[in-house]
Image (cartoon, rainbow, N blue to C red; front, side):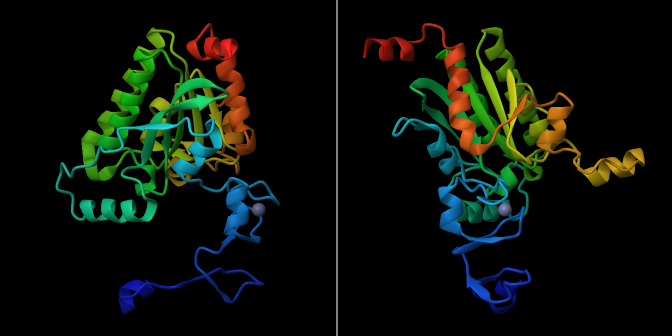
Length: 292
Ligand SMILES: [Zn+2]
């Protein structure tokens, strides 16, 4: 990398492509991962990072996602102060965490809290794949489990947006343990008839797809999201067969009954609001709004 060779930050991003050989200031333009067209980043952000031409859904930060869903000013964050330790003394783990903190402005790969959608109170956990690939270490698992517990205690629904490469290898078996912990929290919520809506976004793989992400009362996905456990190459090598082209996409999972509905980002708030409304039986929020 240039940075390593010359010890200074590269100021420009080269965007490969026929008509874009010139260097473009970093952070100003973005190439669509679907149609390869180049857009002003602001233009894409205004459209919730969905390409206006081809509809490709790019990554969106946890806070941008939350802002796109909740009634204005209603979101309150939980457990922001929880920070990862380095239980295995894994080399350079702390440095990597710190780098991602600087890059994303987040303390960890998930943001949890509560707010209102269509005036209905709901708990939420939103994973952010920019932070350590959204991998689930102790803090991610703990924050998600706590959010589910809080939803159970306060009789709120919970919505979880997943975006994750899976378990966090730097935390070894403690990371794998989060799969059981989060799944048990969901089981306890379900035992008390709590509602859990899972929304799988790109990518939802490994230990996250194999635990809480797949056990929602509703399992939704964003268009084109990669959803699966092991990667294509590993499966192909193991079963010695070629897999279909759309294997492990949200649409493939929908076709095979693993996903209930694929929802475009622009439709997400209203669809979730409608479902929360259907399940809301004489809740406080409704009573309050009825009185108003
Ligand atoms: Zn596009």
